Length: 253
Image (tube, rainbow, N blue to C red; front, side, top):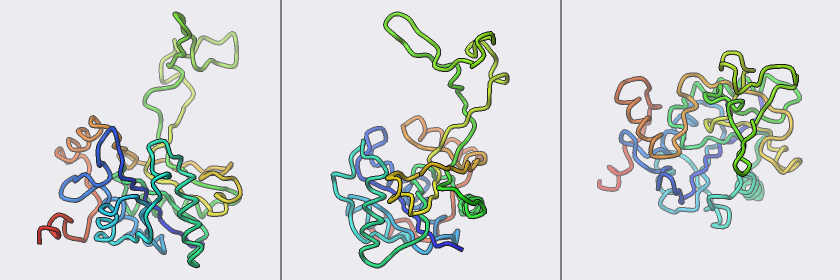
């Protein structure tokens, strides 16, 4: 079985939900709900948090992750592409003799991903041949065939059927349209060679991993946060179990 490392990105800055990676949800910071299932899954030889914040690093260590170094500020902007911090992290670890066959990105903004989610994705990825990576997806709620490009005071459909005699997609019911899937932020898995060979985190041959129910739910703005709290309050979803005491309780000792 190939070796794997979990990489959890948790940069300090966030404009839409300030401090979202460490914002407390039901007693624990969001970061804890990424670390706990990664550890519980048994898939990874190491669980490493990439952050530019000393406070976030302390929280990550409290919940059982490693933070061997801080991420440089130039790789922690809101427009910094993933490939930059992933390549930097893998390179720094490699310099210290730590290398793995695969890496997985587990973002703290998906708090309903579980250890079982990770194990299912890992089994699917390792059961494939000739692939570069796996990425979590779900069926599109808003079909891109219903989307438009505005050009001045006119608009044209973003997508059209290849058959010119077919009725336009924008005027067809959702059920009649080709199924389209969108990636979500719950997890990605790739061979580490992909980073060096393609300078991407995904490569060219991707395996789709279909998330179930709310596994792929992503908190990216205040509205998402309200939905997450309502789902929890109504008992629709549960959070992954966290073994450690809440971080604030430790601070207030």
